[in-house]
Image (cartoon, rainbow, N blue to C red; front, side):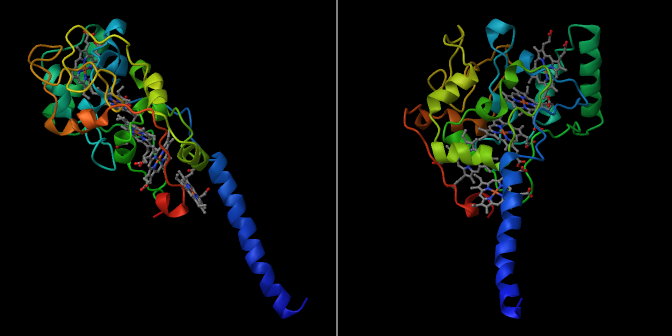
Length: 249
Ligand code: HEC
Ligand code: HEC
Ligand code: HEC
Ligand code: HEC
Ligand code: HEC
């Protein structure tokens, strides 16, 4: 083999290597799909975000994850958000009381609850929640029916093929509403600003006045972006960029 031919083989080998790595990323060989670790406080989504007919409070996801509509990271609620209710709601069962006592201890110790992170993409991936939420992609499309999960688990693979599949084929907000399993009929006291079932909102929590628990619920002012009138459902399929730089800086 001449020196020249040896060098021309390198790009070929490189391409092969990158190809193999991409294939593994695309199919998610390293995916932790299905993982649902125990949490320091056994927080039940169904009781809070579940539909009223299922015995839940139908709270808007954004009440607690309230940076989802405006920042890249979605964030966890501060303990004080919980204590707005749990200074009064002390738990129905002995097991429930134990969990609320744990929560109260974090509060009095002025410590955040060390929630175990479940969904995570590698640091070299750029994932802006805000772009998705504002485009009407409902939380449930990517996270499953969290409002019915006693313990949250990773619903989607979060691998590259999963992202690109939706970006290429597009997304119909109507699919999102279906995925969200929104009640077809608004609860009796629904007084939300957006039409009931607007993508990006978990309808059912009044935006004005007293909430489901009198005096306890006031929506944070900064959580209204996704429920603004301009987030009205459209039947248009939304496609998104899928060039490498859009997700890998
Ligand atoms: C809008 C009021 C409200 C907020 C805010 C709220 N909760 Fe609750 N929570 C409730 C109600 C009501 C129940 C149901 C209690 C029952 O079943 O009697 C409940 C139940 C619970 C339970 C189960 C207790 C049991 O008896 O089974 C836990 C644990 C809990 N909440 C933790 C939290 C945490 C952690 C936060 C903050 C991230 C939070 N809650 C925020 C109202 C609230
Ligand atoms: C009362 C506050 C509250 C509401 C309302 C709420 N959540 Fe949560 N959420 C939490 C807390 C606390 C955790 C961390 C504990 C756990 O995983 O259960 C959490 C965890 C999660 C996680 C996992 C985060 C991770 O580490 O990857 C997802 C996804 C999620 N919530 C989605 C939702 C969706 C979707 C809704 C609306 C249907 C919703 N949440 C409503 C408080 C809330
Ligand atoms: C297009 C898919 C998609 C949609 C829509 C989506 N998420 Fe996520 N979510 C993700 C991915 C991917 C991650 C991991 C992000 C990372 O590691 O930076 C994540 C992470 C999270 C986390 C943990 C991150 C943290 O800050 O602790 C929570 C909580 C969460 N999402 C809640 C929500 C809620 C609530 C909604 C709806 C308002 C929502 N997500 C909509 C894909 C999505
Ligand atoms: C269910 C469909 C869906 C999935 C899954 C999804 N996206 Fe998106 N993505 C969208 C839509 C819709 C938009 C918004 C396009 C717009 O604003 O017009 C978007 C926008 C984006 C943008 C902004 C692009 C730009 O034009 O600047 C980035 C970055 C992005 N997504 C990354 C990801 C990553 C990373 C994943 C996987 C972890 C992912 N997305 C999964 C539907 C999806
Ligand atoms: C829509 C978002 C998106 C686009 C566009 C995208 N990627 Fe990715 N990429 C991801 C995600 C998410 C991961 C992490 C996958 C995982 O953890 O399994 C990833 C991982 C990778 C990895 C690491 C594989 C590994 O196993 O370590 C490489 C290499 C890669 N992408 C290359 C590319 C190239 C080249 C392009 C352009 C042709 C591209 N990506 C376009 C979302 C994207």
